[in-house]
Length: 562
Ligand code: NOJ
Image (cartoon, rainbow, N blue to C red; front, side, top):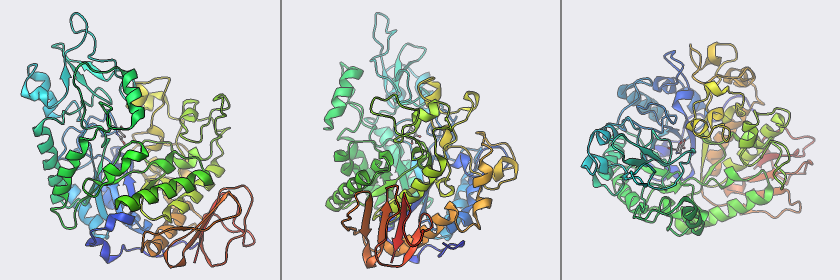
């Protein structure tokens, strides 16, 4: 493992290749927590531009920005007040153009987040709707209904929002509006042509500015069947199990008409603009989102939800590669993002026993551990990181594209000890005592060990950073050949050499805790999920998630061989 990246420039072909996205390594930036260039405690666009050399050094193909649009931050920016602008606290459109140029000059692509299911309640259309009369054209852009009860004092249905609490909020003239998320996030009415046209305008606006692709927020929620009588929450839960498009709120077949229209727009550009759906749907329904006649790609969260387990990993990969081959889509892989407990932490927690009572960990999502105050006595930090490094090397060797989340290249753990007073996530406020929320994976990055806010900026960070960030800061890892940062750099550089085709061949193993596969040109990948060291097959080891011991691959580790 050497300290410097093996290659720093993305290949020239990335610029013009219409298929650049199929096997891209994409890095998610949560802009308000990445790097603060103007000392206000909030990360910004100029901060991203300043760190382009860092991104380039990681060996990425593309960068995806979570929302940077004007927002009152009721949901970390996923409450957009103006889809065609930059939050003034984060910069200007000119700053955005400068950043896009810097990213492109470095040979990387740029993906931005589009949030089409709902706007912010501060969006001019929602403000107009509030000021307008019942039944007006302004109200028809959102979902307003009369309430139940003698005077309409009860919500139109008993639906709960994803973040807890009711999904309906009443306005002064008595009507109620639907919000599947926070009350500051009113849902759009996608039956309204004006809404559809406005999103086409937004997609064109950013495409014309050189944006290469889009990440589509809750892509499975846009179209709804709101014919009366509205079903109850319990009925919806039953319909959800059918996975046949009959759920009135989620994953309806009509949503794909919208994406077909978007695809026509994407294909007007050279290379065509790309899109990836965030759609938490059953695996059997995912291909629809990833269709080349629609968005082209859909996040596959199967590995993210799985335990660190050879059987689960093997069946997920096999199933998803078969599905991609059948549909022509490319697979996507992801372990961490801004909505889930970081994978180094998930893998370091004890699983809850079948009776659900044993301990406060839950390796699958880690949320119980956060709720229990992040009890350090049950988190095995070293083991979590060891498994995360092994899992990441496994994932980065798979065909398809890989989505990485800022900070995972530092091996960051979840920050659990955030005081309630400092929390920002609406899931915490709407669900007190049941959820602590997602702030722990959104704490601003540590760039240096000693400076104000660990080098995030010259002011205190908008979410408090823990003392242990000093040990994992970029400055501490940069020249350490054994650091997680350099493991990511070296792996991403080598990955370019094995992404020439999308084939993967499993090699049978006698040990059920070992997975072994071969990629084009003889690249061989072995992951040991077990707790004993194993012998490696013949070949030259070019990379390993931990150092080999007497030529053997230690427990919970991955090696790449040539
Ligand atoms: C999914 C986003 O990833 C999440 O952060 C957000 O809260 C919801 N969609 C609502 O926009």
